[in-house]
Image 1 (cartoon, rainbow, N blue to C red):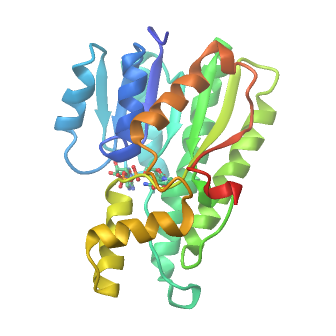
Image 2: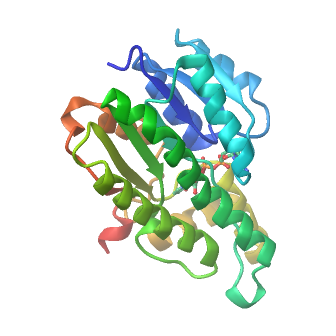
Image 3: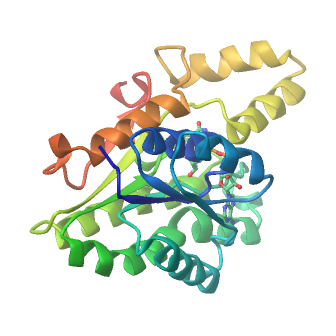
Length: 256
Ligand code: NAD
């Protein structure tokens, strides 16, 4: 379905971003990967699906590096047709103890980066009269949890940005939507489970059960593969007129 299209997925060396890159590649899209840590392994995994893959190591907190990455994508593939803003970090502390540099980093990586990639991707998408902007928000773009001030602010912000982009592009073939996952067992969440186990003196297994039981009625993690499937749906003709939605995939978290 996506043969001849190019998808750029930020933060795709791990977790949800990698899962989405794989599902888009299965549909034939060429992929521009981004993110920290080992990128050779994830790149090979996506290449094995028979598509062209390039990697750019832009730090998503730095607008100049984001601009270089978008130029790189245009040079390699002619432009970005599917933009998945996924890179993100977490930090947990009460507001009065929240380190200001962590606040700035979370707002830059989880929110402002999506503004920069979006503003740079829109001209090519409009010119082709086809494009997909898919923002990986969170249930925390819809509801709050304590001790996640920067994350919740950034995720509510990206839901707002998604709606504005959808409205500005509404008469074109370019759509913008957000995906709002509940718990997904990635390194970002594993750290929260490990911290909880250490703090409460319980096993990792018990901490996992507590974490799910507190918020997610299905008591199941959403998987990167399922989120990739939802991204593929947003890219399909069936979703041509799905615009500005913040689509929860959360085991019932926000239904409560
Ligand atoms: P992860 O830690 O597995 O992956 C994060 C990715 O972002 C990695 O590739 C990392 O290298 C990259 N990254 C981090 N900082 C970066 C920077 N400055 N520049 C470029 N890349 C950077 O985490 P994940 O759980 O897969 O999270 C992906 C997205 O999904 C995040 O936006 C997160 O907020 C969101 N999300 C996660 C969950 C969950 O339960 N795991 C739930 C809802 C939303």
